Image (cartoon, rainbow over all chains, first blue to last red):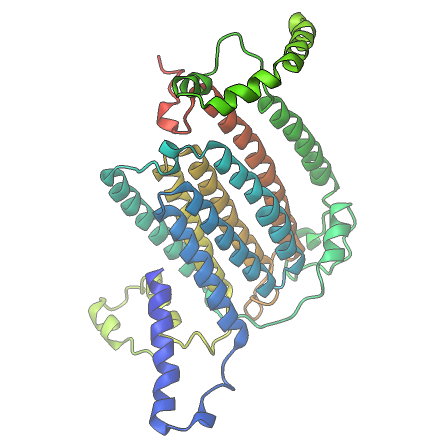
Length: 259
Length: 142
């Protein structure tokens, strides 16, 4: 992250210093600016900054908000890399679905003592050292390949939605990448089916795990709640709705008796 | 642009330059005018991955650990997209083509499934223990 910031500051001086030397606005080096790179720097800075913010924040609600921003900026990076269908899926499934699920989890469990559980300072130091070591290792590995260091040639690829959909049903209509082994053409019908069955099983399992259970012993959360003083309005509401509840409870007790 | 005479005078003759010295020209170039390459995406992916690992190890809130997992998967996705992009590819270098995007799509779908199950487990744990602190989940400890 500090490397990114250094890069931004040094580039700003590159841009500003010639403009100050000539002191005339039309000579601003606007023509040489690669707007793809500028947008990349914007989205990369947002993604990395908010990812670090997720780690640094203690409040779980803020962590969820920063994660939304980080993943949204990553969708922008996907668009800039030419994967427009994947960027749209990132926004719709990840930001629109998974993170809404996470935010619901945060809202359902955000009781006052759990909103911010602070790790100890020794844990923080250990995580910082381990994270810096891991980052150095990953960056060294990434910088060690010459083919990755060269700037991109900027070949704009065809829209990827149709080839992706055809590949998912087992037919490849895209041209294989040059130099790929076996022609690089394999359909993804079987993985697609496996993933669809996996999603079905996961949804059934999640509904089973999260279902409301009827317990003989009161839940721990109810024990905590019953220890608190009850307001009169709540008692009155409970008294009004009591008859309906009794019959419903008896019915479900009959149904649930077999379990 | 960069003068390597200092570095080469420090290093003994005949010794190959360490690979990490390659990042010096990258940061010396003006990032506003240079085209973006694969390495830029790899840096972002590495930062996201590291932030996710730190989040998973540091947070005691179960939902914070889930967020760390999302960050890790997303960092891997950034790398897949970078390797599959023909826009970022260097001259003559191969790409993953569409395969990288298909794998990234599967990762997104499986992350959604994983989040659903993990959230159900977390809510179940919260119902039974009235906390989301993972340090309190020690029922199986002998």
